[in-house]
Image (cartoon, rainbow, N blue to C red):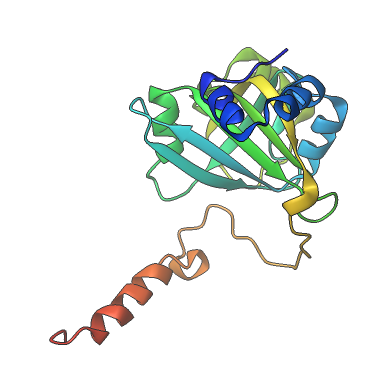
Length: 207
């Protein structure tokens, strides 16, 4: 049974929650994906990705795609595409230094259940895919939303629920998605820069 990290155990002792935590570990923690987990992943159009560099500096970024864009290769292996973005590659840079990765799927529109998946990741250019992903793509031929710059393949260490009690129920609205575009209006990439310029004009002495 998963026993938690030393840090988890220390805080559990302080908060007197050890019995609750042990029950959670016993009932919810898995080292592979169940059928219902696979089903939830296949319905999601977004996932939050957490990575850190070799020094532990963290980054959390969302990824988006059509339903099921995160591929379940088997019950211990996931893969997702990296589409064209800002060119910074913060997540991929972290993965190149530190393979540990955390994913959170949140079903805002139906069950309001979440799923945590933690594991180890590597990224690959399309010409150098590992055999498990190459075989999946050849067999299933999934439709891609845009040109794929790299693939991230994750070996699952643990998977567990994020309960629904604090997850809001949202209503999805139509939005035309322009995958991989460099159009600045479509990207709204001046949003915070415009705010900064407005604030700068309010400072006495600024013209």
